[in-house]
Amino acid sequence: MSQKIEKVLNNNVVLAFNESDQEMVVMGRGIAFQKHPGDEIEEDKIEKTFVPEGQDVMEHLLSLYRDIDPDILEVATNVI
Image (cartoon, rainbow, N blue to C red):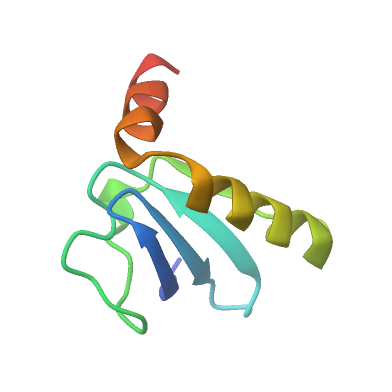
């Protein structure tokens, strides 16, 4: 499934759209390293995908990811 980056939140988290234009948060180690909006996501780097049920949920997720230190997010992802 092809997913295009809409916004890079940090090296490990992006806001993306799939082929059906469904908005999602995609996580993976280095998934956004040297990537820009419009670039395709490398499928082998995807570790987790979150598809919100409504816009309020998406806005809440984005605000959480913006506030989390990237190093802490990476440690938490590795623990999980």
